[in-house]
Amino acid sequence: MNLVNEFLLNAPRDAVWKGLTNPEIAAPCMPGTQLTERIGDFGFKATVSLKVGPVKLQFLGEGELMNLASDQSYGEVVAKGSDAKGRGSFKAEMKFRLSEESATQTKVQVETELTLTGSVAQYGRGVGIVKEIASQLTSEFTRNLEQKVINNIADALSPTQPIGYATTGSEGQAAGQATHGREQAEPQGPSINVMQLVFTGIFRWIRSFFSRKA
Image: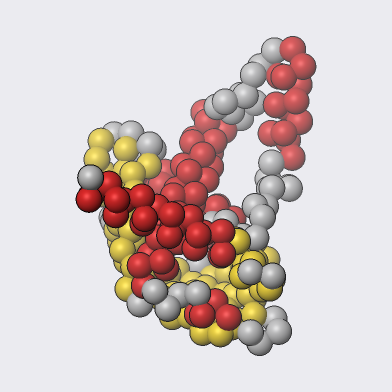
């Protein structure tokens, strides 16, 4: 199954490249994903939590970044994983391209060849639904990655005053505490509720269908 996504990040290309090619930054940005181990500079292990109806799946996965272009324009990721109880597996081969829209904006194009088996594949029989799910996950990934990249830029410029945090009063004190613990305890998102995404995708398809008819 081939999926193509494109998104725009409000950050310069070199900062986006550093984020995308650092598993410690990029992996936790995907909903339901938690990095568990780094392998060398570009390899990693992670867990991916999914909820398919009443069934909760936890995939034990691993991946590697490869073929990274020296001009920060192209790279590849190969990731695969299987459910701890043998109820399904996935393999994703991704190619991503970065282009500079402006000094502060970067376009990212991602082409993914995705293979699903087991319980997850049952809900992926309709390619349109899977693409809708991928689109929603990409949107959330984009928001998370953009915020992390922006925070990293802010930390580099002023380590004690990251973007978006108040600097006076009780809010400033809370911001300092949050900044101090950010790298040690990065908050993890909830598991991906596949059925919720499926129904959301169906609703959006129905709405767009009737909009075309109107």
